[in-house]
Length: 113
Length: 114
Image (cartoon, rainbow over all chains, first blue to last red):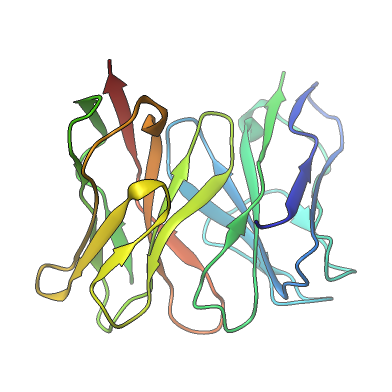
């Protein structure tokens, strides 16, 4: 069973607030990913990381930022939340050389009012 | 660029009936292929994967998928659907190179009638 955690699971917040979505994994995986998913839609990659101190932009442009100071931790931050940021955010991880097999967390559903 | 197409947005089957969810991919070489399932409000759970070898792969929960290179397809099947199989199903192909990225299809919503 993959151990990847996301907190909070649900977040309702007002416009202009700064938020951080947490993602942690206990598998020692090098690579980590953030996806954005609107209801009933496909997943779009917004950020990924090869390892500590590595962050890359994904295929979908996002106003969020990420950091990777520790292997197990890959938080996503929005400096000023807007209603357009309302979505589900999914975190995933993968071992290097793992044939693209990613393990997913339960997701954070963000609503910005 | 790689792409994945799931032609059926929504499928409804009766409990106990067989199921086939279609997936077509666009990729030049032998792809890494995946099927994930997502229950409402949850993350994605890996059902099965294909890397190489036997083109018929078995997964969890009684699912199987067949890789057909000539048709660029990786269809998901289950002989007898249970009500608990109602969920969103995503097909994905691995992006080549070192990124480990996955390219997802649009998803198919499965509804199971009693």
